[in-house]
Amino acid sequence: MVRTLKDAIDSGRFIVTGELGPALGASPSLVRKKAEHFRGVDTVNVTDNQTGIVRQSSIAAAKLLLDEGLDPIVQMTCRDRNRIALQSDILGASALGVRNLLLLTGDHMVMGNQPDARPVFDLDSIQLISVARGMRDGRLMNGDEIKRPPDALLGGAANPFAEPMGLRLVRIAKKVGAGADFIQTQAVFDVARFRRWMDGVRDLGLHTKVKILAGVLPTRSAKALEYMKNEVSGMTVPDDIIRRLEGAEDPAEEGVRLACELIRELRDIDGVSGVHLMPVMWEKITPRIVEEAGL
Amino acid sequence: MSEREVSRFSGWLDGFLSSRPSLERCVSGFGLLLENAIKIPLFRCQRCGDCILSHTAFICSQRCPKRLRNGACGGTRPGGHCEVYPEKRCIWYAIHARSRLLGRVPMLTEMLAVHRWDLEHTSTWLNVFRGRKEAPTWRVGRIAHRLDLDVAKRARQEREP
Image (tube, each protein chain N blue to C red):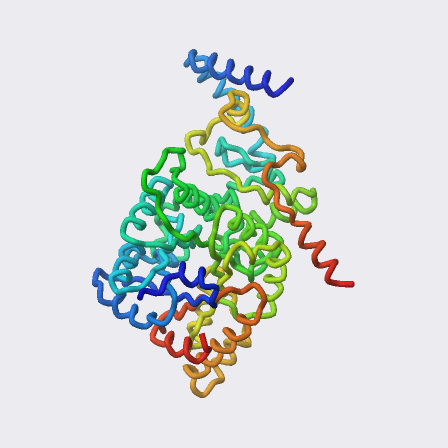
């Protein structure tokens, strides 16, 4: 039996999602190999040329995962495609059997290795969620009817650590209003700050309308965290976390302990429906974290 | 003027101009010139032709490198600096700050429609008069899909005795 996000949401159990980046080359074996590490989670995000670095297309990699018996979430960004291409890809992904989409604005290309590319940003993430919702209800953007509408759960992202909080809450409320079914957050390291954001989310009653999956980024290296803090957009890593990993005798063990601690704390927060594991460059640790955190 | 009269006028104007291509070129050119002369110095207008200034506290949101209409994106750096140009402040932070100052935060809660690229570099004012685009919303109370953000404040007050 394939574990799917839809089943997890319907059953009401604590949801666990993973994330993997498609290969830089044309070989299908990397994605297939990484897929083995995600057997124990409900669904796996497939990133869409994250940080603006060219990789296999997220839909193609998702098809490889479908063939392996996993239920992928295809990430779609507005950076590289206009509205015609986005709608076409939603239809195409659905035809291949993709049942979950994460709709994002996308990192700007200046963060990547081809900053001279033309930025598209024809839609923004909120508009894209609303377009996908319309398509699910049987209409293209221009109002034309779709004979067989795509059937997919729609997700959005949220960054609880960016200021100002008021604007962040407006954004997530708009995403829910546009038709999102689930929200995956940026990696949480500062739980106190995340709690304050969740207070706002609960005040608006959003946690009852949408599944909120808190991001957890297991890592074994202080250097990688330092890199993410400085080079990856939207990432906030407190210095004491970096020092904790730096000072550890066995950084890998410390990384596992840290991730499990975070998961336990996040799980206890009212309104959090699951966690989203992002083991960047460390996919093979996922089964251990799932087991040790009791997920 | 009632709403019906307005729509009749814009229908007539649109038909009148559409059937006279050389007059249309002349009027559009003049409209654009006038609009640019006012909006570029005042708002650093980016001439999208599908203006949403009334929703963004009269700061042009199209200065955002991603041209977001429902910002801010998740990539902003600490202190509210832009993901793309770290030395610049995020334009959406400025929009949020001024919206608070002017009591226009509810305007930000309305999902703004996609940019109509076929209107780019045309006069928004003329587009409104011709009925090609909705008129701006001046009064906060008039927006269609507002979210009750005061809920947050009230709920917090109830919790704290």
